[in-house]
Length: 141
Image (cartoon, rainbow, N blue to C red; front, top):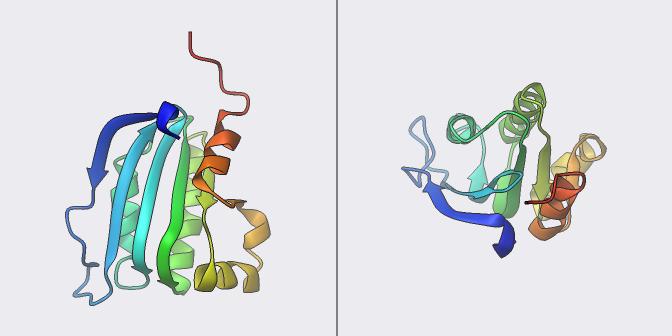
């Protein structure tokens, strides 16, 4: 991942979720050659799902991938799941693809129970997701 990342990083301006939330969600981003990596930590739920979408909206570029590292996510409810699906649609409309990495525990169970697991690009690691986005990407000159 080091060779494909750029030094620029963007952090969420607030660690607490929106709408009077008590559910913390921390967001961090890194630009990649093929898109952007966003790392989520904490809980993704009805109190902060729009914070994720707003954060990502400013990062998306046409024809680039969005990789969400969910390794630090400890909880996700139906609104969090809906946010992932909405982001997938937004990225697809811009000509890119959404990739989820390090999905485990409760978020993984929710994706599996709802049948969405098979509809998304899910990878065991960030490195595997980056490798998938590099497949077919032109080599740097």
